Length: 258
Length: 306
Ligand SMILES: Cc1cc2nc3c(=O)[nH]c(=O)nc-3n(C[C@H](O)[C@H](O)[C@H](O)COP(=O)(O)OP(=O)(O)OC[C@H]3O[C@@H](n4cnc5c(N)ncnc54)[C@H](O)[C@@H]3O)c2cc1C
Ligand code: SF4
Ligand code: SF4
Ligand code: SF4
Image (cartoon, rainbow over all chains, first blue to last red; front, side):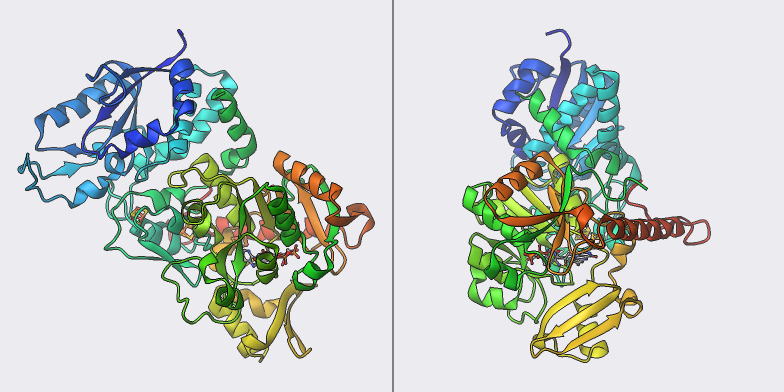
């Protein structure tokens, strides 16, 4: 089909959990590939592995700066893609790879890892460890509408993606490129915005957050820096114009995947 | 004017026809009856509600397992729980005027409790969390919510505020309280032995959760069905049916005889009061957001809606 968008998937230092989450869309993934997405390259799910010119590239994993190939690949990804999406906590914030000290076989000298935003400009962040299949699906559909949709669909996709495009530029508590439970402390709780819903505790992949007397308490030593809690928090961002239309948008996404 | 009540398909005044359930409900028993019906019909497999000490003693495995102090659950401290039977629904009925982080169970409901179809009750902000979780599910994997029931909410309180209001201001022990209610401009505390204490809301204001002061939703605009006491006569509830799902569940529940209704136009004080209160809340909290924008000297506090 001519009006598909071209998509690539660059896999750096990530555990393949993001890849699995994408694949866990099952039939939805097949529909995506059938109707909307021409998957140009991807190490696990496509034959072609080398980076090519594409509309949108998803990047899983952080960049090992001791690995020449990884550094070249992230730069090439930027040069060859119109839109770069950091998929998952590692690509967005370093996540668990932040804790590396090297010494691991079979490349003991590969010890320093940076989120991709420290090396290239990133357009969209999808935090989480791993981000859910449904989240990846929603962004993929919106990326399609942004590039190929009608004027109305483009407006919707722009509004939907806006907060995800703000994440790379706004910076977080521990420093511009790393996430942490501290983001909730500094940007929500200390700002007098928390209302005790419990979303943060629900989404933390390592159960670092528990609700005590209705408010989140972070076990910061457990936090792996994935960014899910702050992204999910309704008092992190809440774009009423988009979320208020949840019914129509969910219907449109489901219809697109029929 | 116009947007303060959100989008809705219909609005009525209603009351559950289940007399047993009504004895335990806060108002018209709408929330518990809807869930009981949805459980019977297989629309949901279970519902996330706000349980309490007594519930935990009976059904510990149905409650949230986190680091909250579950050894000593104070009277009137809500504990999010999953209910799957009418007996459990009744045990968790009634309003607890302090924070029950129901969304904290939204992922666990599927993972640990095995629910495919989740019902959830919550305040307007919790309904916002449910919808954000469906459009932006960063960490809510495979979460399917076929029935989200919202409750009207002017403000909520930290647990310690309720402790102070009841034990200091109303001079009653929390464990001897049968019911609390905010209505007719007062905070009411009903004792188990029949005593009633009322506090003017100007006493309660300073105990409110600060996060509530930027909240722009009074009547749970994002719920499938939302309900509260305001607008309807005592013992009755005002109901907004909002989404397609809500419309279908409400129609089925009505056909099954779960509720008796009166046209909202016929009851006193009616929608006029709901509209007035919604406007008051939104206007006041918009002013708070404005004040936050110029809070310091050339420095603003964050606005989550921008
Ligand atoms: C903090 C708060 C403020 C409110 N403010 C208003 C108001 O200004 N105007 C108005 O008309 N109505 C308000 N309500 C709603 C009202 O008190 C009743 O909850 C509502 O009318 C439902 O009554 P019912 O008889 O249908 O529900 P019931 O059958 O009694 O069921 C109530 C359900 O709500 C759950 N629940 C109880 N406490 C909480 C909580 N803190 N958080 C989440 N879920 C909870 C219970 O577990 C139960 O499942 C408020 C409720 C709360 C919790
Ligand atoms: S607290 Fe949990 S959800 Fe938040 S950044 Fe840390 S690991 Fe991620
Ligand atoms: S998700 Fe945000 S608003 Fe909700 S409890 Fe956590 S910090 Fe508070
Ligand atoms: S006033 Fe708003 S923020 Fe506060 S509990 Fe009610 S719905 Fe939530």
